[in-house]
Picture (cartoon, rainbow, N blue to C red):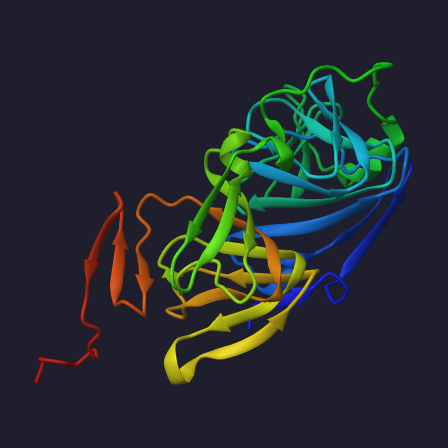
Length: 314
């Protein structure tokens, strides 16, 4: 059905020198297809990942709790709960260091031909295999975590530097509120505020008993929702065919494109807060079953009449 919980998804523990962490595979457990989200919990003094740089994938991190240091291409900045961090591709290797125990969500797309580079190691991952990227030399290599743990952590300055424009805190992002008959929500567009380009992430607060959006489904865009606070209901489908599933903090909902099944999140009596992550597809078409509308590229909306496949063919 496309839903999981922090406590239900499979976790992996790493204990390799300074790379000590627990990874919870939320996107896979929720059934996401072309995007993913993982929860990374890191004890004080450790790092999330080997320093790496993506060629195509844009990564967005959201700090759930704790405090750390964002390290990118040798430059550092302090990060804390409520921060959104965008790591754009081809902008230098990055990682996160936990000053206090830190708990983060890592969102990103999945590209089959992605080749992440590990410049401190001189290796890249090509087709899932580590190959040496030193000029003139190509050979198989151990997994990047093992190599990075043997190399030791990157150097950190005594004090973090200034925060770049790619790190924003929810308290500093402008909010917009929409109130209609069914929908009453307040959004903060964290992704755009931090400079994301190919994907986006928003913090959404839904008023008690109201909905976060009109019921809809996408043709090309894939969405992930992470419930942070409150309670509510995930409604899939429309009319008599609709199903309702209770959701609360820690639930992760995946809505792949092209399912033809509309979705909406409705808040319970104490309201609902969630993160909404998704891809930005210029050719996406969105269907709204309540109003029989299509949202077309360019912000054009048209009314349609749903028909049977064979209607008018005989």
